[in-house]
Amino acid sequence: MPSRLPPVPTPPSLTGSAGDYLDAFGLLAFRPEIRNSATRRDTVFEIPEYVTIARQMAETLTGKRITQGTLGNSPHKFVWYNLQPDEFSAAVKGKVVGKAYTRGRWLFIPLDPGYVLVFGECGGKILFHKLASMLPQKYHLSLHFDDGSALSATTQMWGAMELYEKGKELERQYIKGMRTTPTEPGFTTAYLSNLMKESIASGFKTVKAILTQGQLIPGLGNAIAQDIMFKAKLHPRQPLDALQKSHIEKLHRAIIGTLQEAIRLGGRNDELDLYGSPGKYVRLMDKNAVGQPCPECAAKIEDMSYLGGTCYFCPTCQRLL
Ligand SMILES: [Zn+2]
Image 1: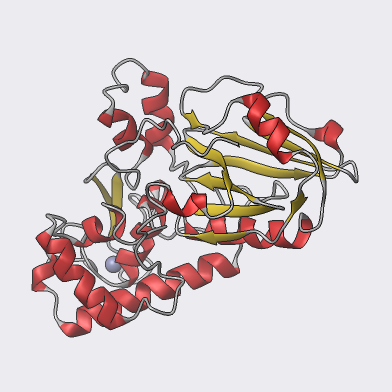
Image 2: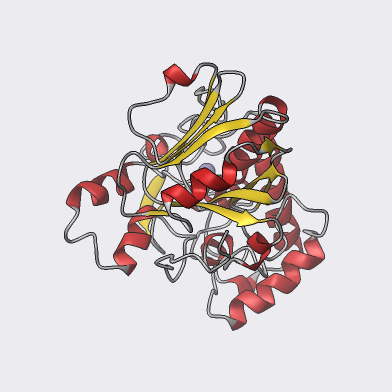
């Protein structure tokens, strides 16, 4: 298998919203239907969805032998493959699925011997089908297994679906040099405090910026960040350099606590798990909250556009310091 680098149209940042990303290519002007779907909901998996799908894959797919693998029966401009369809099919045939795992916004599925299938920066549907006949009509990747079951992946906005010789995936942009993620033990309050200094120096000077921009905290995105900021009682535009130690501790607790809860509940309720069921985590701060009373103080929740995505916040609980 060739080990060339994937021909990805690398965006400046994949941590913003869908509209943010497409704006980077000047595409929204030509694709108003994408703008609408991008602003209607966040369509990108974040840590809770990746952790849920990786766990379910490890439970369900481990040990299955691949009889057939296909790349994309439905053309899609924003699916990034690193192989031609025939190269992919030849490489995966006969391989056995190892235990899937995740890091940040990347999902790794060992295909033994010798390969790793990688899904990254994606949203949409990654689904297990007990019977291959239940595959959706359109998909961007499928694997058929020797027990008659199958996996399909269909991205809604964009996403990487790449196959690497084992170890080569670590050289891929965004995986190589990925910072500590909040699900790792190294993500301590002291780590966050240092990251803030780095964030400010890099021009990401506000609370929303450190949470969602520049791959500073891999795996967080605009959806979960809203609840984190609400729980930390911090305004999205709050300058980081005004935060005291107690604020940083509170923000750290909010990041860890919100993620733990969303992981425990199997991801957000507007995303699907491997079995096609929605998660059970209902966001406190999303478009449905606008105009509704804050759960803590009863002030009306507001929204504003900021840093490539809509922010939802309580004007009383989340005052600028
Ligand atoms: Zn409030």
